[in-house]
Length: 88
Image (cartoon, rainbow, N blue to C red; front, side, top):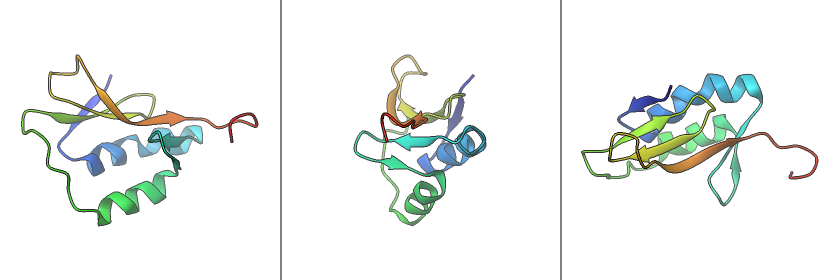
């Protein structure tokens, strides 16, 4: 079950135990983030203004997304991935 969060930082913080436990990185489509580096980056970044009807989603697999329609269509911002020898 996914959880809902008001800010991106809170959503990433919510998946931190999953990401750390499973040794995952967060993929934003351009680079892979360690949880510590991403949290520091988000903490120091200006907040992004999104529609007030939406919220961030922290998924049970460690992925983080954003939705404005109660989770029917989620825009995945960070996908939790485990790197192996073939895709490092």
